[in-house]
Every structure is written in C-alpha cells, then in structure tokens.
Length: 402
Image (cartoon, rainbow, N blue to C red; front, side, top):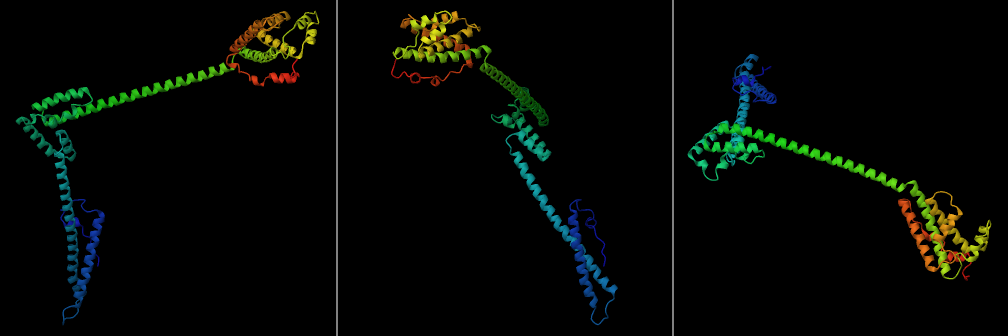
C-alpha cells in the first residue's frame, strides 16, 4: 500500500518555527511515522482478515477499511511523539539560554565601574538594562549619593580617560567628568562623549607608536650608516696598513742596506773581541797601511800583508760602508770617499782604545738610523745564524792562538 508523505509543518498548522527541524530530522521523523503506519496497518489487516465467529471471511475492501484508520492513526501518533520530544528540547534549550543570560547580566552589573558595566551590557545587547542603569545613576547624582568621598571616580564613566596618554583627552575627560558629576551631562551624552574620547586616544596612541617606529627606523638607519662608515674606515685602514707594510721604494732599499750593516757589525764585533783577547790581529797595522799606500798595487800588497782575520774584518767594514753610502748617494763610491768613511767608523793605525770604542758606537747609531728609515719593511735578522767566534777560530785554525 502506497502512502502519501505528510509534512510535519502541515500537521502543526504552521505553528512550528521554521528551521526547527533539520532535513535529517525531518527524514528520520518521516521514516519513523511510515514504519508505525505499516506495522499497525499489517496488524489491523491480520485481525480484520479473521472475521467474526460464525461469519464468512471478510473481503479485501472490508480488511482495508478496518486496518487503514489504524495505520493512519499510528502515523499521526508517531509525528505527535516526535513533536513532543522536539518541543521539550526547545524548552530546555531556551531555559538554559535564559539562565546563561541572567548570569551574564548579573556579572555585568557587578563590575566596579559604570563604564565597564555599560560596555558589558552593550555586548549582551541589554539596552533596557542600560537605560535602567542610566536612570538609576541620574537619580543617585540628583540625591547627592554619587558625591560621597571615594565614590565619584568609581561611578564616573570618564574616570578611565583621566589618565589617558593624550593630554587633550585628559583635559576633555576632566571637563566631561566635572559636568557629569554636576548633572549637566546625562548618561546618553556621556556614552557618546566616551566613544569620541576613545577614538581620540586610539588616534594619539597610533601616532605615538608611528613616531616611535619612525624614530626606531631612523636610529636603525643611522646605526647601519655608522656601521657602513666604520666598515669603510676599517677597510681603508686595512688598505693603508697593507701599503705601509709593503713600504716605499726608499724603505725597501733601506731595509736591504740595514740588513747588510747589521750582518757586518756582527762580524766586526766578533773579530774585535778576538783582538781584545790577544788571540789574533784583526785591526790594520803599519805594515798593512804602508802596503795599501803603494801606487797601482797598493790593494794587492795590502791583501798579501793581511792575515785572514784582517781580510775578513776589512771585507765586513767595506760592506758596511757601501751600504751606508749608497743609501745617501746612490752612485759609485770613489776610493777616497771609501777611505774617509773607513777612518770615520773603523779603527786605523794609531787609534787609542777609547777612540776605537767611540767609532764602534758611531757604527751602531748609524745602523739604527738605517733601520728606522726602513720602517715596517725591516725584519730583524737572526744573528745566531752568523758565524760565531768559535766557528771563526776553528775555520782559521786559531784554537792555539796566534
């Protein structure tokens, strides 16, 4: 038997709020109603088909006539039960919402300041409560209760703005607060003024934050520029230091001459020490000086008259003189100038010990001057690599002393 779906909204005559049942709920209710109709129709048809005792079996039409109302009644009862369950759920839901709203209203009314209460009631949409609160505050001000010591600031909606960051907002808040306490500004006007003060304060704070951000940006930019300048200075300083360490042409020449003079001094100092010990003769003698004065062959005769130590001393002395003079003149050195320099800085026949020591000191001072001219290019030599006195004695077989 086919059944025509029944709309629950039609059964209730449009009394059920739209949207109360979701499509899934409507489909479930329809299935329950149809199942109830079929079950009750089948049971009614089974009973009707038995007929009364002593009578013949009823016809199909009689069976349908008796079982049909039973199925329709079951269908209607199923919808009634569904509706009753839904209505109970709606009632419980509405009751819970009312309880929650009442609690929220009580919490809003218990806030410490009028401003906080009004803001909380606005969020709840309780405008009747706001109106009642405004009227109550007006009566309190008129009766003088709000002017009791310690209660004025707590009840004033402008109290929060009396300590605002904006000087203009603080000034207006103080003016509005005085007017509110005197009753010349009502609650409705106060709420409008509070909104204006709030926008002014937000704008001021925003400008302050923007100014702080701009200042921070400027400071960051300044710091970055300073870092770049510092990096540039460091780079230029590095380049200058590299150039300084590379030295000029004159400094490089002076460094080479200084090395030669230091090495020559090391040799002459050791040989003079041997001379002072009486082991060898290293300084010029009358014989070597006379031989040097012979025309044309003076140099040859002088070398033949010299001992190996004297030749070594003469070579070191000549090397020191050439290093010193070429730094000053840069040209070929004539023999006369070489001899004059030799007599200035090295012992000759007839020099007394104080004079010999004085010449030695002059060589030291001149060598240090050459080192200073070389600047950072000069690198001190390791004099330990030069021949020692013992090595010189062994090389020239001077252990027994001559």
